[in-house]
Each structure stands twice: as structure tokens, then as C-alpha cells.
Image (cartoon, rainbow, N blue to C red; front, side, top):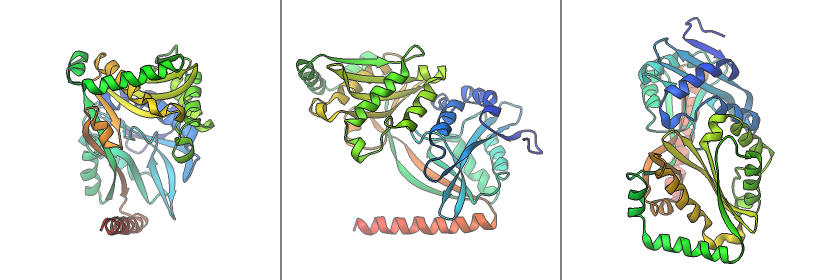
Length: 367
């Protein structure tokens, strides 16, 4: 379906796949993973869960001069309000794929957003607060009469390539490295132990993801957290991603096997020059051996030995991440924008009141 302006088109992921792939390849390389399969896999596995309602719809905008974007969304109901919510994997973060001049793309998206009917607002998040398209989108939407609410989610931690593998090895804590290796040798003495690195189109990804699920099943996360590989929906998601050659090459899984049993893993996703550490877990039986530290060590060596410019370690446990040399990066924020309609204004004031109440409760608890 075309808007009266031929630069704006409404449709499905498949209808826009070719244009969208071009946009992802021509846009910021650290966000190259925001391509059709990333959202298509999410749609197959998760779009009917929780307060989401399928199908996933897509808007593409293109001014014919190299400035374009794709906006994939599904309806999400929060209380009595329906929102058109940017979808896709929650981590590393969501984002709007684009290429070209961010300010020109923002104006096109603002016009496209006005064509989304039957919703009280549009949710954009979680997204990085230094995203240049979002920074251009806020003033563009405000000028069109939209309201904008932001809530902080957390802070990413990043480790930049210090100048190659030798430079990385030179600044590492020798005492910490010695401890990691001592613990690893201790595990090896208890039985045959191997750290395997999986990557590429020839990998048996279904088996790899099954092994990761087995680790989660024996980990604390299966009882008190959110699993990433355990369950049919999670397996569907990752196997759908890995069928795409781009993602088969971008995915990196490090798995520790002890006596042929998978006991620990870390999954990373490479987006050209940025490596995102996505998920990790370990079997409680090997907790005292710090297998995660051994894997992290190999991940960093592999990244900086292969010209990866930055490793994004994600949110949480800033002390542990700092021990690897990571520093604070972008903040992740959840954004909801509200159109200049009666329904949009009502939802905005309800949302603003809810945010104020949440902040009041948080501040009161800290006193």
C-alpha cells in the first residue's frame, strides 16, 4: 500500500525485504543487524506473547536520494491504550534501520507515523539514547505536535579495541589471567573439558542452541530469571535467525563441555565492527570454576585479534564489566510518542502521571 506520497509505503516484512536489506547494509554498521530476518524471527516466535498482537507491519520511507528507513511494528496494548510498538529482539537493543541523512529520514518517518491509525501512540524502545536518527526524530515530531516521553532502562558497558590483540594482552591484569587459568585447569582435572567456538553457515546451529538450552535448564536462570534458549519459542527464534546466512556468520557461540556435557556458554552477535555479548549462563555444578570468565577472555582475544572495534557487554553488574576494562556507553531508553489527537493527548497525560508516580515511589524508597 502506498501513501499519496510515493516515498512512504505500508506493508509487510516480505513486501519490503529487498529495500530493507539495502537500508540495513547502507546504514550505520554497528546497527547492521537491524535487518528483515531480525524482525521476522521475532514475529514467528514472540509476536503473539504477552500484550503483543500480530501481525508485524512495516513502513518504509525513501526520498529517492539515498535517504530511507524501515519501521517494523506490532500492536501492543497497555491498559486501555493500543500502541504501535517498534518490535524485534529486546537485546542488544531495538532500533529503526535507516540510511542517509538522519534529519531528512526523520521528517519522512514523522509523516509516515501520522498514517498509523487506531493507536494512541508509538513505542520506540528500548533504544540507545545516542542514536542519531532518534535525536533527529524528536524535534521533527515535536514540530508536528507530537508529545514525547522517555524512561531510562539502563546503561551499556563497552570495551574498545585498544589497538589489536597484542595491545589488549599488554593491559590485561596478569593476576586475574592467572586465576582464570588456574580455575580452568582445576575443571580439566575433574574430567575432559573443552571450549568450543561455533560460527558460520556450516555450523549445526539447531544442536548448538539445544546445547545452550541444556545449560540454562541446569542454571539458576531456569528458576529465577528469563531464559534465552529454553523452550520452543526461544528455539524457534534462534533457528529462524541462523537460517539467514548473514546471521549464521554474525552469530558466535562459545560453549564449554565437561565430560561431553554442555555446562557453560556465551552468545555474541557481530554487527560488522561491533560485537554484542547477548546471553550467558552456566550449570550450577561448575559455578566455582568461573567458566564465564574463561569464555569472556577468549571472546575478547578473538574480537581484538580480528579487527572488531568495540565489544558491547550490555547492561548490569557494572563492577564485573569494569574489571574487564569496560566503560559506560550509551543509555538504553524506552520512548513513547503521542500524536496530536484526542486519544493521543489522553494517553500522554496518563503516561506522564504514571511516570511521575513511579519516580515518586522510587525516590521515597531511597530516603
